[in-house]
Length: 115
Length: 111
Image 1 (tube, rainbow over the protein chains, first blue to last red):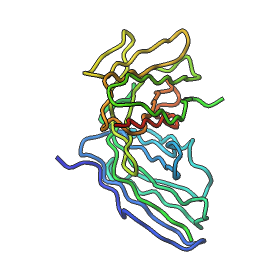
Image 2 (image 1 turned 30 degrees about the vertical axis):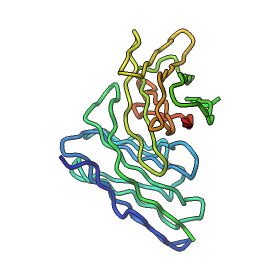
Image 3 (image 1 turned 90 degrees about the vertical axis):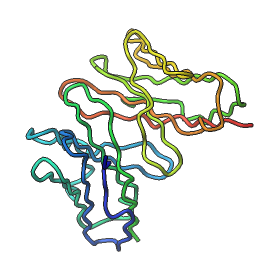
Image 4 (image 1 turned 120 degrees about the vertical axis):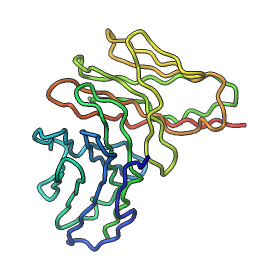
């Protein structure tokens, strides 16, 4: 079946512009995660959605970052007034599991470059 | 101290060798543990879950030591195709349900 889909796959933007990154999770998966990964670094947690619960936003690095998940499915990560340090691969993952965590299914990521 | 800590490596081993990685975690309330594999410029993929009693999947063995707060991954008879970064992943328990990733340990298997 279809996996996690992210778009765009690559995005180059000028410093100061806003960007929107999209994630289509696997159908039926209740949990959705956003991470980012800088070159040669580990995954940095950004935000977590679980069903209708309030999202865990504890990883968002600044108030320029926001995310929403509409209808428990598609999610959009928005970065306002982008900075060069925002350049990274933004990874979305979904999971059918709830409490104990479980197998995350990752999308191919969006590679964001801020010039 | 990082919540999940791994030796970044790289571990350079010959084909056929046995190699082991450890990962330490800071939160004693952590509930579940996983190893993921990430190939260069690719997304991470689940390799195996780690169970309290230890578990094996072919050439791969995972173990959990709750008293010392670490998990391990043992790879026997290394193949060239095992070359990748291995990520330790921990569910930090109630109140923080998102999974926390370590920075990864890079393995390079050489012919």
